[in-house]
Image (cartoon, rainbow, N blue to C red; front, side, top):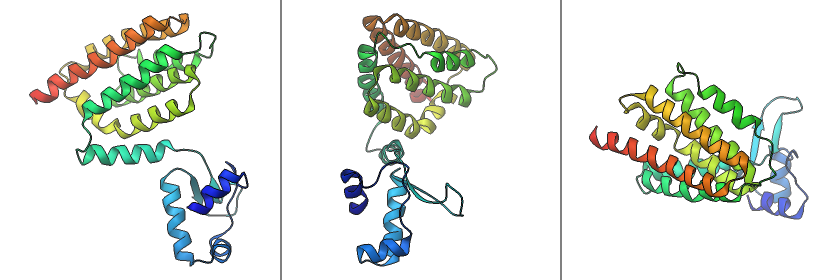
Length: 224
């Protein structure tokens, strides 16, 4: 792990590069192949490497940059062990997404992805699990307007980690179609504020949206 980190820091390795084989790495580092194999597995779980068998251009062990995978894994474990409450996640979302709303570039114009997601969420027959997946992607698309890759990574990792929890809470709502229409109207208003470059309105709408939906699901989760 430290060897890969050092090589990345030195610029000897970069995203897209292929690592030497296990045997060559073991000889180069002076360790056993089993030690190398275990280290590669850890780095793959952390989203630093991806491995594929075969002889094609995508085979072997390749350096990637998907740190949200490790964040999702760590947060998922914290939620499962109840070391972190869902309420804590909501507070973190508020911090991240209100920052995005307040710092979105007023000259940003690439809103097509967010608009397409919003249009798809307007389908009244959309199953709740598909709606929530689109919803999470919509919020991630908005984050691109702030041009902060770390914020985007944190949001992506968090939405992956809480996907199952979010779905469980949504399924306890008594009238999902009505909730979906309300959420769609709120999403529409949020996107419009982003597109206008109205930071104050965008921040307020995002805060109300996240807080309101959490309170709604919390009420029904507590009653279940």
